[in-house]
Length: 383
Ligand code: HEM
Image (cartoon, rainbow, N blue to C red; front, side, top):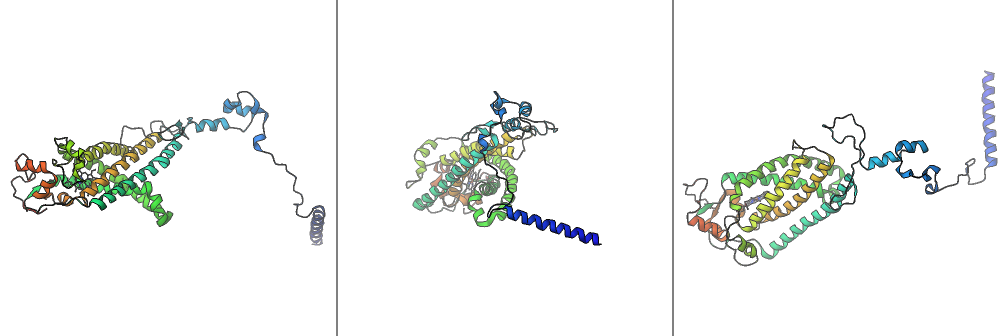
């Protein structure tokens, strides 16, 4: 026991003596035994090996020989898209061995690795210019409505109705329109919600909202594609160019004047939206959307195919949205009686005569039946 006490006393004395010695050595404000390190810029450190000719072109093995542990050549190759080894079969994971994609220059980006190039196109072009385009469209429509108001029916309704849309046409149209609204709301939230929703509802709620809407988008897409095809087949015949279309276009449909320019069942403005929005942009949006949904069985899905599909999809969808905002305006508050036509299927003769005079004349001349779905029926439903 006394041995233990002796040891404890000895250790304590050694510790106190050591502490006093350090205190005597140190000057005020300076760490007692800190070594004096001289700083040096890393730029000016030139290991001899870096002066050797061909240093920058060395392979990883050559570099390891002159500077053990320096594997910069390997990372430089990885950054340029070099492929490494992977045990996954190429047929299932074609680019699993590629960590960083090779350099590419997408329209509007710098020459850089493809992931970064895609990011630049999205964030520096599609989002700012696409968003501005949609705001301009909304603003132009608001000004038009403010200055011109809705296109009204001037004459009195006759009570005699004409069938403008058959039940099949209406079903195809509304299925397509509903899918479109889901796609538009979810697409706009995914692309622009960060700027006008996230600041108000916060990160957590916006994360969930974007997650739910992204899945809604993925499922509404194929419904839109199928119904768009049916809409195209149903309406293509009456959207073919006809006499009177050019005159209508040249006079802007008479929209800025007092009376409308006579048109067929669909006027030239509707035909422009049909061929530009439903057909051309429809093909681009649907095809690129099916790639993004990975629904095309014959395609190899690599990061580059997704990046290109995304850029095509976003640009075409923004243009399509701009066109259909115009269409929705004209189909609702912009034209008196138009929405009723698509809802009930029927329009009054006065509406037909004022908005589509050439079509009305053809019906009166018995070239087109007034009731296509029930030709014999003498309908008197007020549209
Ligand atoms: C969601 C809102 C929509 C509303 C309120 C709406 C409303 C209307 C209305 C009222 C008409 C009848 C116009 C007339 O009598 O001449 C019409 C026609 C038509 N709509 Fe829509 N629509 C919508 C979305 C869509 C979408 C998303 C598409 C296609 C992608 C579409 C394609 C058509 C076509 C093809 C016609 C026939 C006119 C033509 O072929 O030019 N609509 N729509």
